Length: 300
Image (cartoon, rainbow, N blue to C red; front, side, top):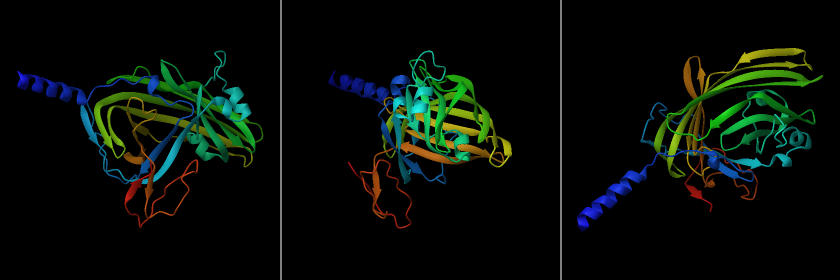
C-alpha cells in the first residue's frame, strides 16, 4: 500500500512539473516596475524552429554581454503634453494607463529625438500600444496610433492566433511629417518548460510576425524617404507573474535569411569581474563586453 501511494505521489508530481499555463493581464507590467534584463550576443547559436506542446527549451548557456532595466512609469509622470495627450479617460481615443521608457517604433530610431516614452493600455481583454512620445527640438511631441498595436489578446493560450493592423501619422510644421503602418500576426506555437540563467519557468511561446512601411519628410533638409520595414519575428516566452518575456529573441529577414537581431532575458544583476567599475546605485547600470572577462557573480 505504501509503495502504491508513493508511486501515485511521484506520478502526480511528474505530471505537474510542467504545466500548460494561461497568460492574462495580471502577468503584464505595472507602473513602478523596474525589471532587469540581460542581453546575449546575437552570434549565440539558437534553433528557433524547436517548439510545440509540452516542449523543453534549454537556454541555460546564454551569457550576458550587457544589462539594462525595463522601467515602467505612470502616464502622469511623463512630460506634461504627453501626459495630457495620453490621459487615462474613457473619452480619450489615445488613453493609456502605463508608460515605459524608450520606444520600439522604428521611426524613433531615425529621428533626432530624446526622452522617448512608449504608451500602453491594458485591461482584462488586451495589452496594446497606443503610441509613443518624444522630445523633438526641445518640445515634447505625442504620436498616437490611429489603429492600435494589439500586442496580446487575453486570455492567451496554446494555439491561439490573432492579428492587428496599426498606423500612425505625425506632423510638426517646419520640422517633420511622418506616417507608417504595421501588421502584427501572433501565434502561440508552444508551451512547456523554459530554462535560462535566471531560472526555470512554465512558459508559453508567442511568435509575432511584423511587417510594415514608414515614410518620413524632413523640412530642414527638404528630403524624404519611404521604406518597407524588414520582416521582423519576435519569439517571446511568457511566464506567470514575470511582467515581461522571460526570454525574447528577435530576428530580421535580410536577403531572405532570418538573422538574429537581439536576445534578451529576465535576469538578476550580474557583475563581471573583468569589467570596469560602476556604481550599483545608478538607475540604469549597463554592463558591456570585456575581452578579459572573468567569473560572473551575483549582487543580491
